[in-house]
Length: 112
Image (tube, helix red, strand yellow):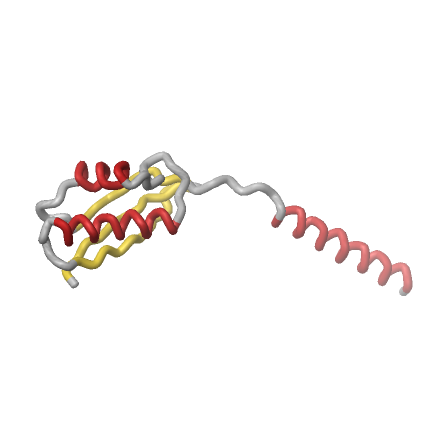
């Protein structure tokens, strides 16, 4: 009985060690593969990309996805609408997984 408990304890320790090493394994960054826009109206994508570049926003296709950068990108879209008197809008940012470690980002613009 004592041998069985010892073996059982070793199995638990070994399994816990494997789980810990797996959680410490390096993960690959999620990459933005596509960006879609809906509800832009008279605002065009080139204006949005120019604004992102002007503000040195590190957000775009084939770049590492960062939720904070995506939120800032959405805020810049909202600011463009306000600056051009195109209305007070709400910008929702959603992501859709495409394949492991890559996704599509969708900016949906709607009236507030």
